[in-house]
Amino acid sequence: MVVSYSVKILLIEDNLPYARLLEEFIMQEDHSQEFTLVHVKRLGEALQELTQRNYNVILLDLTLPDSEGLLSLPPLIGQAPSIPIVVLTNTNDEQLAIEAVRQGAQDYLIKRQVNPDMLVRSLRYAIERKQLLESLRTVNETLQIRVEERTAELVKANEVSQFKSEFVSMLSHDIRNPLNIILLATGLLQNYDEKLTKEKKLNHLQMIRSAIKNMAQLLDEVSFIGEADSAKLGCELLSLDLEAFCHQLVEEVRLMADEKDMTLVFASFGQLGEALWDKSLLRHILSNLLTNAIKYSLSGGIVRFEIIGQEKTVIFRIQDWGIGIPQKDQKRLFQPFQRAENVGRIPGTGMGLAIAKKCVEAHGGEILVNSQVGVGTTFTVTLPLIRI
Image (cartoon, rainbow, N blue to C red):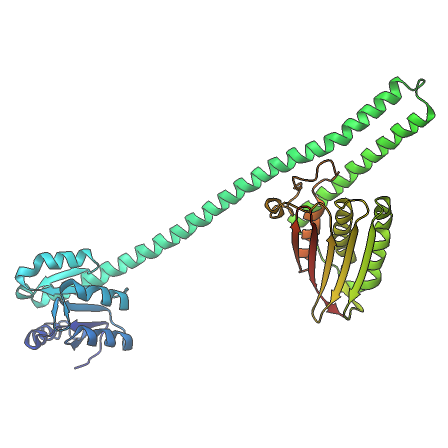
């Protein structure tokens, strides 16, 4: 019999007379509009029923033809974890019923002691308790997520703070070197002006000029990294003949290569033509990679620069046969002020690759490095191709 209801009960009981008695208790006049009871005789039938309909509470006999005792609980809880369970037990099974509550049931009833009021009270209690537990579980999960998020924020803040300290320390160190050169050179010019030859004076002035240039470059690079980290680094796309632009960059670094008696090889493949590029970002990327390839190559070596036009992307590949990069240094190579341990006295700020990576990301691309000490290094940059 099905009537209007607010609470739907699934009764799992193989004893038909007792099941009818419980139904009579439920269907008494005081409760007939509040509850509806559906009766099944086996655990398997109950599991099938739970897949087809929604229930508010389960009444479970702990002795069934296809399941015995506590073995009935895990399948029910697994099938319907949010539905409260009230177990039914005989007088001599009370300890078993208590253990069932410990394992997830909300309440238990001893069959011989059940009356209508006790049954209804137990069902209401089970539903309320389960709802409270579910609410607490949701709150706990929310709190756990917030704690994890806050912990992650604190860890990140600590990492940022540590990075800032290291950043300031390294910046101070790199600025101090050119400042010391300036102080030394100006001191010599001031104290020994009359004793210095014209050639010496010019040499000291050149040292001062070079040191100031290095400081200005370092400050520009730091400012650039700051803009990138604060999301102020934009990508302004304009029409550009990519092949001609790259050829020009090669010519700009050729003098640097000639000083080391090196050979620059430039090649382009695929269909390139006019497309939209950010000229400034592209110059930062390719100039840094080209100058690094020359800087870390041996005299008389070769640097190969290739651009490969594809349907939706362009690949820039810069390869050298220089000193290479140790494997352990490659992961941190794109962080500011990071340089490989084998660079020796080769000058550099450790900012070039960090800037290149920021520019690549601003252009929506990817940069990869493949290197082996004593063999050489290949940087591969992949950028989206936006045709006009």
